[in-house]
Image (cartoon, rainbow, N blue to C red; front, side, top):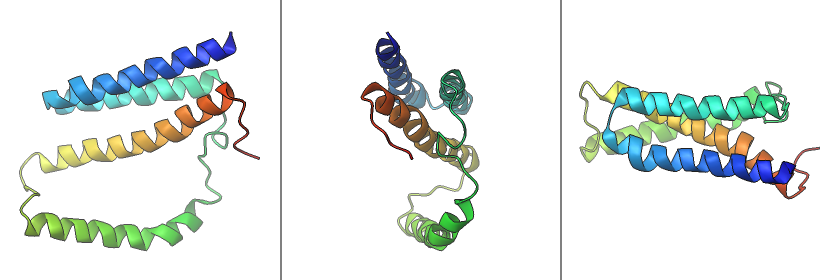
Length: 135
């Protein structure tokens, strides 16, 4: 029965994500976009709490944060600057009143993708198929 619930949980979240991508995002409403993103974040967080997953279980640890920041931080900054320069050069970045709200939505969306796929789908599929992924 636990495996059936895992499949239902995976399927429901996947359907919510598809609705977000194909229905909510095309509407172009900042409030709806952010609200839908927060709904997914809440669902994943509640699911992790329900399954009694610790921060370490879901991959959120401070002991390796600064080490990984040192490894990828400078590369990330260089890449951001390069992408901004390219966007300005090719005129694909439009500095209008929407740039900051759009950037906020993309920032939350990127974090949410990583959080959702690492902490939700990865752990649920590992439980479903009895994979040992940590330890």
